Length: 519
Image (cartoon, rainbow, N blue to C red; front, side, top):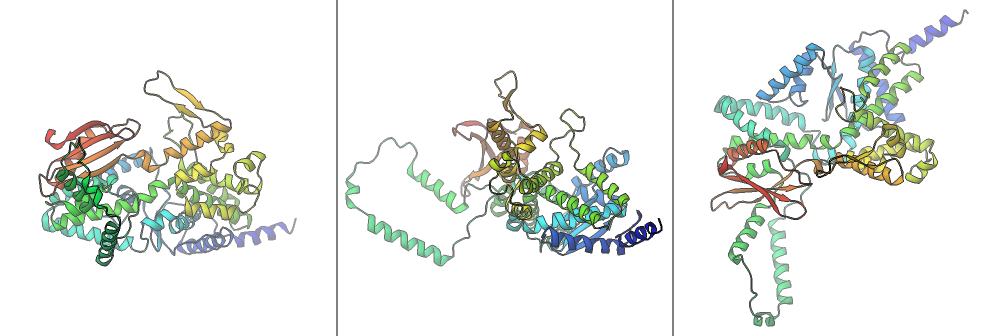
């Protein structure tokens, strides 16, 4: 009886914090402990961390400006701010516990209203989980410059402010409106080969001429001319030359307008470039939401449990952490009024914990589906490799297990446009599991869910008519009103007529065509 208070007192002295109140000393001590365990036990590799504490008002402001506190001004951000503030004040929507920026150093914004237990949770989630994913995932390494984004945003904000002073807010706003409308079509989806130097171009020309001399045969001259050519050769040659000089087709519409529009002033081109760079910065995040949030949630859940097992967090704090964790990974049923699709936090966490289970305690079914990782015990290596080398689509396609398919009660519905009823096309058997996994993975493929619109032709020395092509998938056309409004924005930046042809992606047949002449 006499020893119990001594044990309790000793355990209390080992706690990282006690009570709900926080201060910067507690935050620093908690971060150091969390980072130490994350690096040693999970082998995380992170950027240096800069932590900032902000108010709910500042968090709402960051929400409205696409999650970037250091952002230029635009009327749409104010509109989003008022909308989110109204929902927050009415209690219809909560605020995120934190905000993290993919930068070097990684900046983590904490809500000042959070309790200390919640600050520890979001520190593990953002400063360790998101931070590791940002630094190591190949999409972020390929497409984003973590070391330069903060200085670029600072430049963008000040540049647009100077443009407003010089040219007027209305003129700047008009360019931003049109550029924002085209952000979805303002990214590069594939890396391009580097441009050849003039010396390399001359060497290539010399090699082609030498090849033509070796392969030339004068007998070809005696053949009669071919019949049935409908298009004049000069027209074909002109089209081919335009495609070559303008590098067509071009998928990045903002880039094409920035480089080739004949009506834009230099300051307008720079604003388009700013919007395009920011759109490219967010491109990897759209492809990795399940993985990114799943990684951060797995890390915070694992680290918080390790801290509790080591006596660094009290039972009361752990109960609060688990309550907030449960709120984050809650998945409403399909018939629940709160249902809005699959919760990426829940799916990502379940898949990563399932990899941990398959690696340490596999079933016979797991050994059949995942022979490379089942029973090997190296779940850390498997997760680190997945976090580095996959996006949502490929991660689900490779690692979604039959066990999780049953847990989530997933199945595939065939919804034919010419059929009066749905059909359950894939159920829980061996063939069905593969089809369910493939269908779910396909739904996370950004390339399959975004419209494929490209610049295909323009005669800069002629009528300067800009011709776009929409490669239609599965017969899904663009909504008329949105399409027409977007064409108007393109014309305002291009300065001349613009047309959009909808072409069937499989047959190549033209389905429709719309021109700004008709608007």
